[in-house]
Length: 315
Image (tube, rainbow, N blue to C red):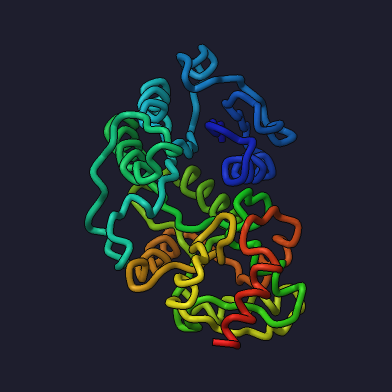
């Protein structure tokens, strides 16, 4: 199997290349190489995707391509250079504009121009729709995988890793929202393995590449079991968190995975059934959690959490 990975140095694209090499495939990672080295056993083909494709891309006779780009110009250029391969394009559930439900019938309006997300973060979903369309219209065969929150070793965001690390520290833990709020994550290793299966089988179609939706309370219990902790959880309601300007989802001062309800009831509640029927295999979170103890985390600090808990108990 001759595989072209567009990227290969960070998180999902790197894990995909690592596993492809382990399968004995001929793997080339086309990228600038500025985020780190490509995996051992893979070939590094230098390509800044703002430039024209090098001859080695055009003449590669690739069996399959895995691409994770969010920029429509990059998707159009790449698929025009390698139209005969089977394309595995990694999109996102952000292509669905209504986060209040798990509806997959409506897509965001395509944004065909490249937009700086630092200027307009809301353009992400529309650009991914345009990337999907470029692949579907120009590749000989293709499959679209739309992940939700990808977690596991190598995650640069810390959106999930906060919880294994926080529960491992012990003590009273501030838990956001309600124990019944649905959340879902997918381990990067499971997603990468499935992408390679899709490439090898030349599967076509569009799938939500997500883990199983679980109540937040169950997720924290499983994460705690994975790191050998029995969490002492204090559930703090949404109104209190918003009143105290706790950020949702990710970033400084945030409680990761927490999302305002009901505006985001559907974002972490998509159906993994079709993907599982197409071969996606999901490991339990008890196995994912301990592998996230060394990941970087930017979220609520211990001091901020203690202040919030004190305010909650004194209200």
